[in-house]
Image 1 (cartoon, rainbow, N blue to C red):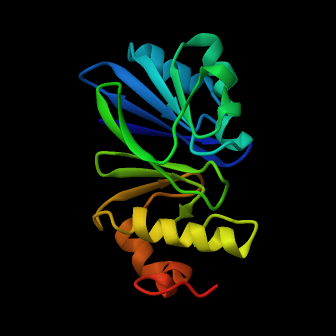
Image 2: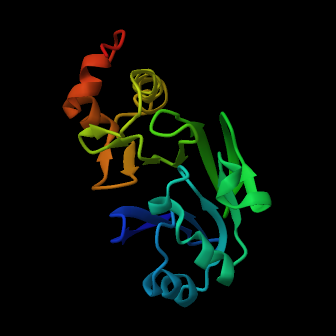
Image 3: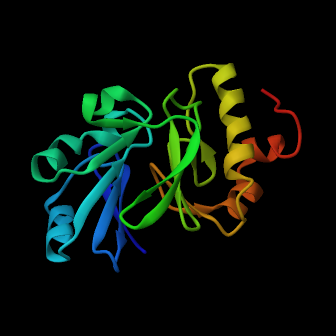
Length: 195
């Protein structure tokens, strides 16, 4: 598996192209903007775009979906039907699916938005706007913050410390680094949240 990072300069969000070199298939996570570079990478490598995964329904994470659908016919996975209407494979809760010859684990992680999902392939977790290097995603209420913190503790911090976190914005990090350096979560780790 190879992971390619593309920056959406309009929303400063991260788009990821995950490639299964053996199957010559790919998955895109959060196509905020589809550039010539992404299309060229798919075409020059003779990849089949098998699926698009959306972490949450915000334009900076899915605006390029319209462009992708004009060129390719990928399966679209999200927790919100409105992402692509009847073409959306709506996923809820936690589970796993096989895409592009890879096992993709998905986990509902509401808090930033009600439809927030994280995806894990191998030892890499794509966190959308739930957690970034050194900070949390924004929430609109103290209850949402409690839910977000609780889910991060149960679903992200329970992974191996070497698990790489690929956020929706900013640089990658690891579970170990976030346990050590994210002060809001450090207070929460192992105890009831203080909100």
